[in-house]
Length: 318
Ligand SMILES: Cc1ncc(C[n+]2csc(CCOP(=O)(O)OP(=O)(O)O)c2C)c(N)n1
Image 1 (cartoon, rainbow, N blue to C red):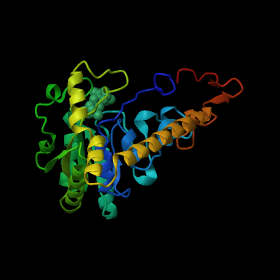
Image 2: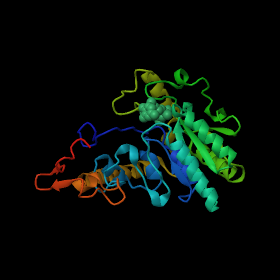
Image 3: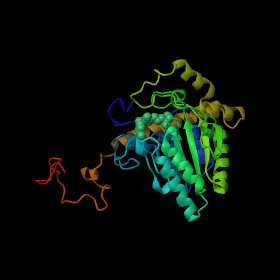
Image 4: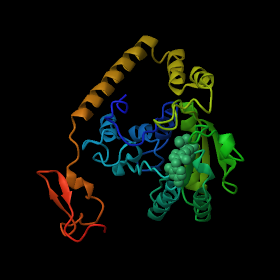
């Protein structure tokens, strides 16, 4: 809705349907482990300790956002909890994930790198390169394929010769996990984390599903039927699954859960309102964090009264 109101801008990829993956992953790891992933990063960021307000403020491009409103939906980040984003270019972060694992091994800190990518990304050459190096050097990396069954408007079967992604590491082992079941995710990740520490890299395929289109510009129903989406919602929804477990095992009653849901929804609404109140970044931020010392006055001046950037004479076209 914020996007339709033109308050959230840029690209936007929703992750509803895939919630069990970050929740289960965080339950079996710690913020000392590194985590890096794609642009579909809202839930993962919250799992890594980015607040809901920081996520919304980032979507709205405000200074209270996770990266001061400069990154947007695809570039959430929290270095102090070893969350390295949020990357827009498909597959490019996977070698970086291997690099993070190299750092853990070098420092001997007993931690691993969780490197998440999609079923579409799994066909990229650089994934094979990252797997080769991490196997060669025995790096503590867990490659997590979030198989939501679709790339950008393309089903996995039209893009992948083999859609058994957990087998695609050739000489490294793989594990298939029901990515809609948070407890299965937790157990799978706990196993894989231990394996990575003792024996090196492993692939974990999380069988999950995205309800929405690839991004906000994709209605998401031209390459699959609405019945299919409704069917997954009815049979496999990760949140309803937790509700069933909690009530069946009498850990909470359905009215307690409804009350909790109301409270959380109100909290999210409050966070959205607070995000809307946050200021836009100052114009100087256009070049802060780009050059080591900031972009010097030798290149650009700002006429802040007119809010316009002026290039010095003779510099046009550089
Ligand atoms: C190198 C590169 N090629 C193409 C794109 C455009 N693109 C963005 S997402 C995407 C599909 C990726 O699908 P998948 O890896 O399954 O992840 P999902 O979106 O399903 O989470 C494509 C082709 C891109 N961002 N980067």
